[in-house]
Image 1 (tube, rainbow, N blue to C red):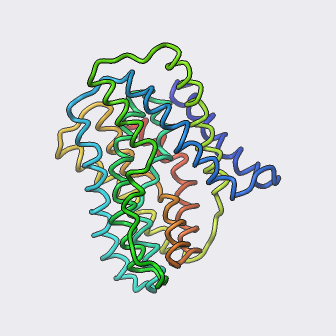
Image 2 (cartoon, rainbow, N blue to C red):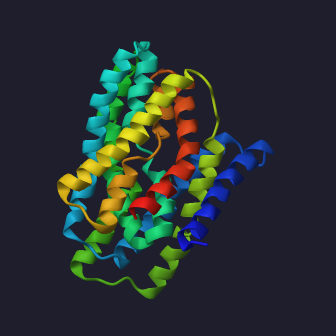
Length: 300
C-alpha cells in the first residue's frame, strides 16, 4: 500500500470516530468548538513552533499568504455574480457568499502533515494566516452587510491579532532569524503538546458533520465554486507566481479546501440563513475527506 494512503486512512477513521461518538452520545456537537479551541490555543501553536524550527525557509513562502488573500477576493467576485443570478433571498445570499469566501484551511493541516511533515505544516499555516486575516475583516464585513441583525455595528478587527498560531509563528520565525536552537527539553515538550492536533481536528470535524438538505442544488453550486473553481484559482496563482515543490502543492490544494466553520458562526451571529450554511459546510466536509487526499496525491 502507498505510504501516503497508509497515513490518510487513520485520518478518515478519526473523522468517522467523531461521527460515531456523536451518534452514541459519548460526545455532542457542542464539544467540537472546545476541541478546536484547544487545538487553536494550545496544540497547534506548539506544533507550529516545532515545525518552523525544523523547516527550511525559502523566499517564495511570502507568496503563500498573498495567494490565500487573492483567492478570497476572487471568490467574492465570482460568488457575488453567481448569487445574484440565482436570485437568492438576502440572508441566503449572505451565507452563499460568505461560505465560498471562507476556506477551511485547518481541515488540510493533518493531510499536509501526513504527506510533508514540518515542511507542509509551515506552508499550510502561512496560507491559513492570509485566509484568517480576511475572515475577520473583509469576509465578516460581508456577513454584517447581508445578515439580518441590526445590532451588529462593527467588525472585530482585533481577533486576527489575538490568534495564538500567529504569535507562535512570530516567535518561531524570530528564533530562526536569530539562529537560536530550541533546547531538547523544549522540543520534547512541544512535541508532546502538539501531538493531539491531528486526531482532535478530525474528531471535531466528525462532531460537526450534520447533513442537511435545504436548497441542496444551490448548496452544491456554492461547494463547486469553493472547491472546484478554488482549485482552478490555485493552479492559476501557482503558474503566475512560478511556484514549485511543496509550496506549489500547498497553494493549489489549500485553495480547494471545503467551506469553513466560521460560515456557521457568522450565520448565527448575523442572522443569515443558518440551515443553508449547515448544508454547505457538512456536505463540503464529506467531499473533502476524499477530495483533498486525492489532490495532494495528484499534485504532490
